[in-house]
Length: 91
Image (cartoon, rainbow, N blue to C red):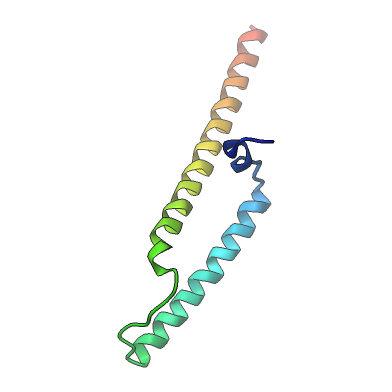
């Protein structure tokens, strides 16, 4: 049985990132619509189940973005190193 850490890891393609971007874009539009409606209707506040965990979810999204940025940086560094290694072998 795979470890918990192993279950969390997986390959991400640019298409996957595009899908995530689309989902988040749609969610942003929903939040903006709801916020606008609350302002228009002068709704001071509403009780929402799960709102206390939103900070944790936002933190997880920030961590994912950081992991993607680090992955891109590692890929670029590897590509640059491969070019350097190829140049040094050719001399």
